[in-house]
Length: 211
Image (cartoon, rainbow, N blue to C red; front, side, top):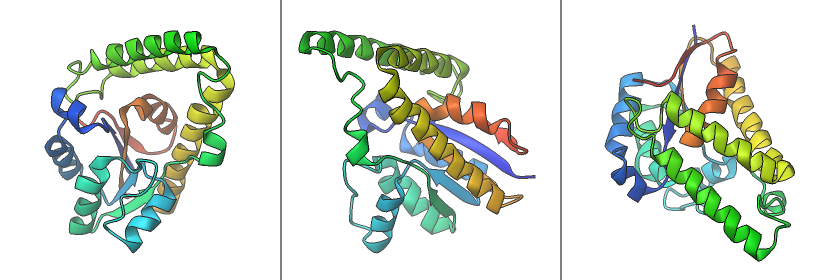
């Protein structure tokens, strides 16, 4: 049977250190899982750029630093196949600002509330064995995105719902073409809940959290 695991990561190096989810932790989780394939939150175009030039750090701040510093080298060292699964198209993405259409004063207030949601998410870091990989974190994240949907349902649909649907479909495609393999999904922790909710319906053994 195909085994699929999920690791939710924190992209910011400073936050990783603050909340005890270092690259060393991520490396130990990957090593324990022993994946044949890693599906990562990397845009396919960025992956192609990396393959052509290992020193090219992509564009638009993507991929996140854990890929350059850990995951790509680990895949190369251990002959793990890497599959990029992220999706966004900037010519579309930039027209769907979650706070678009609000006045400057309203935007400031919405940003303040958004920051509060982030702090609520961070407050759950110790709830499970892996920071930000827990029922408590996932529930807080779900509530945050319900709020964002209320603020701007159109932007939420494009930037979150559709994006996750495409990312998860790319994982499903990988599952379908690689039966009986060990596949590890490495995504920003905000994606944990939707990935688990969808992939648990597949005829696979789903492992989340990994510890």
